[in-house]
Image 1 (tube, one colour):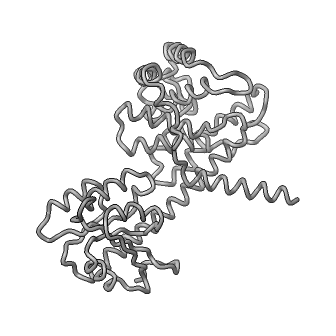
Image 2 (cartoon, rainbow, N blue to C red; image 1 turned 90 degrees about the vertical axis):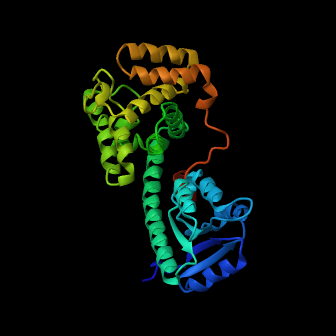
Length: 355
């Protein structure tokens, strides 16, 4: 079995302060299948991983200064390395190392002295998992880029999707939601209106008021978007946001007319930040409203039965007592989908200019 059906070698980073251990692993892993890279300390590994982009990290637990546990923990704190396969190398008599490694997010572990066949098999399995994850990530990036194309059709909303991703996560954190729910909210910020890709431009970009027939077409976009994303298991929580973000607490929304707690919680969270962003952002037909006015409207609409009062209360507490949390940090990193979108639009502009 070859770990890499694409023809390129799988990149394995061995992190160990002992040169003899690194050399042993290099001797075991077949150079026709694996490209073995080395780091002699935890600090070196943290510096080199963003540059080398390994498929798998073989990480020794016991190293001076920054040990393997700390390296693993710090990698898992970074979004881009949450799914990177990390195999911990631990001494046979140190079961506590295994527990600590798994607690900070290690993918697997191998005890030393290791069996060469076992080491190769575990590394191969980890590489295959990385390949599958990368293919899934590519699919998600295409969906995200498609959603940004939809956003770009309306040149009036600016970075609406990125703002909603940030705002949703801030509110989700205030509600104490787990990581998986926060990740669904982040994705929902980008993907919530992806279904509009199927809405004719004559309806989507119409300047005046939609008539009844046009409105019926527009109201289909949550269901279309949910269908587009439902095939991906990683999108299961996000699909609820896409499908139900136009429902209302009193049951007057669409597409399903859900009310109260029948509306999934993540969709109820998203509704609040979506209306906040719409009110507080400048549009051709209105100025950006002051946050005091936005708070007043949110209270008024909640009293009319539009939004979940408990979620609105928590959001207003952030808005009034810690408003800086609602601003996207200047050093925020955009995802690969944003890069893909910029590349796509750049190619289109270049093609147009050549004509």
